[in-house]
Amino acid sequence: MAYPSNESGEARIYAREVATGRQWPISPGQAFFPRWSPRGDELIYRLLGGEVMSVTVSLEGDLSPSAPVKVTQLPGAPRGNFNFDHTGERLLYFTDPANPGSDADQFLRLNVVVNWFEELKQRLPSN
Image (tube, rainbow, N blue to C red; front, side):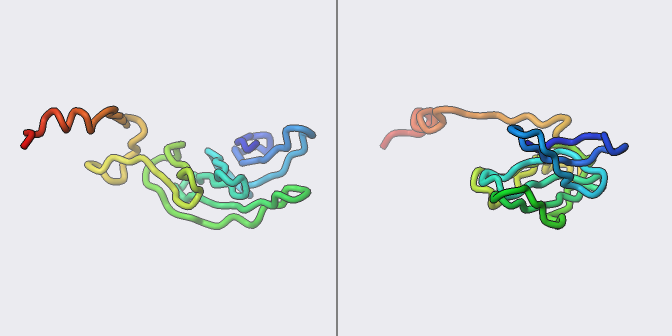
């Protein structure tokens, strides 16, 4: 389990082994919004400046995190509007294309259209 905690005096990311309660610091400084990769061997989190950092972890024995590596820079205030895709190979980020650099998750609306192909067939002329 990964989570932010301010037990050190500032919000940092920690990982905890649920069965034993053992805890490891992940971020060396202030960080937010930890996300595990689908494989469970990588953890990403966001810094105040918008940087998304990545830490790889060993799945054998003790959790031993690598040094953090900057993955990308995201615009806007640090929010949790990012995550891995289902493969763990790409980072997904919600933004407003009409207003680049804005903090889109304050007003993001996602429309899901089901059975769209049936509606398309009804609207197209049949020849």
